[in-house]
Image (tube, rainbow, N blue to C red; front, top):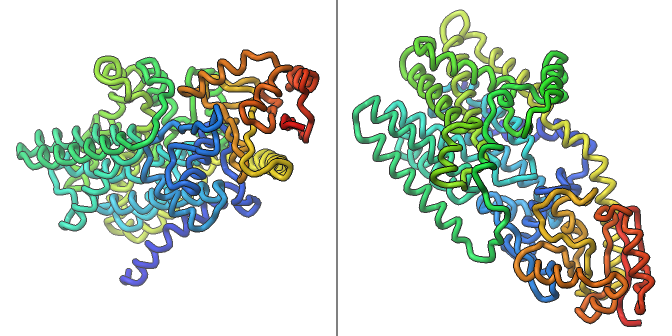
Length: 561
C-alpha cells in the first residue's frame, strides 16, 4: 500500500464510523435537533451541556433553584475531557441536544482512532487495527451508554490497556520516543475524566508492571508503571478538586459494588432483540430467567466474545498463542483479562476491595471496555497470524472485511432502544417546546416558575410516570424564565420541606410573596394526574388562574391581578 492510500484509509475510518453510526440510529429519519436520550441521566448530560454553552462551567445552573436567588448545583460527573468536547461541539450549534449528539459522535470517532493506534503498537496489521478500531468504537458498551453517560465513554481506555500489555511483556510503551510520550499522555489524562475508568486503568497498569518485572527481572516495568500510576493519581486529585459546589448524591457502598459486579454470563450473552434467531432466543431466555441486576451495558458483542473465549483458552493452554512478540502479547492479554475477571466479577476481589479499602469502586461494568480491548487485540493477533503465511496471506483483507461486517451487523442490535425512542422523544420535545414558548410569551423575562410536584430527592425511584431529573425538561427549552426544578440539596431541600407543608389552596398567595409568577404542574407526578391539586389551587382565597395546558403540563398564573 502506497503512503497516499494508507493515509486515505486512515482518514476514512472516522467517516466510516460516523456513517455506520448514523445508519444504526436511523439517521436518515432522525432530526439532530432532538436528543437521543431524554430521560434519567441523559437529562443531566443535556443540563451540563447547556450550562457549558451558556456559562462556561457545568456545576451550577443559575436559571434554576429554590428559594429564588439560590443556584442549583449539578451532581459533578468529573468528566472534564468529555465536557471539553461538548464545548468544541457547541461551535457548531446552540441547541444542547445537537451539541450532545455531535460530542458523542466525536467520542466514538476518538475510540476508533485511539484503539487502532494502540493496536498498531501491539503489532496488529493495518487492516486488523483499522477494522478492530471500528468495532471497538461501535461496541455495545458505547452504544448502550450513548448520551446517557458521557463519563463512561472509553476513548482513552485503549492507552491504559496497551500500556499494561507493553509493561507485562517488558517492552517500552512505544517503539519511538514520540509514541512513548503519546502513550504516556493518553494514560495520564484519564485522571481528568470520570474517576472509575481511571481507577480501572490504574489497576491494569499496576498488574502489567508487576507482571513485567516478574517476567524480566528488570526494574524498568516497575519504574514506568509507578510513573504512570503517579500521574493518574495527580490528575485524579486535581480533577476531584474542581471548584464549585459538589452536592452529595447517594454514597457508594459495598452493596452497590456487589450489585454492579461483572457477570460472565452477561458479557457473552447476545444483545436482546437480536436479528439472528438463535441469538435472539438465547437473549430471550436470559431475560425470562429474571436474573437480578441485569443490564445490556456489559455485553461484549460477537467478535469480542470470540476473542474473549480465545484468551481464556490461551490462559490454560499458553502454547496456543504462537511464538514471538505476538505470542507474548497474546499471553499477556489473556492474563490481564483473567485478572480483570477475578477482580470485577460478582463477588470477586473487587468487592473485597470495596469492603475493606474504598467503596468508591462501586460499578465494575466500567471494566468492560478494557476486557473488550484485550479480547479484540487477542483476536486481531490470531487472525493476522493465520493470514501471514501463503496462501492465506492473500485473504487477509477479505478476512478482516468479513470480521468487520459480521461484527457491525451484530453490534447494531445495541441501537434498537435508540431507534425505538426516536418518535416518542420527537413528540414529547415538540409538545414541550410549544408549551414553554407559549409560557414565555405570557410572562415577563426573568419571571420565576414554581414546578410541582417537588422532588425531595433527585435520586429516588420514579414518581408514577415522572422520572428522575424530569424537572429539568421545561428549563432545557426555556431562554427567559427561571425555574424551581427542585433538586433536594442543602437549602433547597429545607425550603421544599417547609413550603410543601402548606395547604394547596394557600400556595398561590404564599408563592406570590416568595417572588413566583406562575405554577407549572407536571401531571405525571401525581396519581390522579394532578386533578386534586389543580382544583385546590383554583379554589383558594386567592385562586390561581389557568394560563395554558397540554397533555402533560398545566400552567397557572399567580401574579397580582
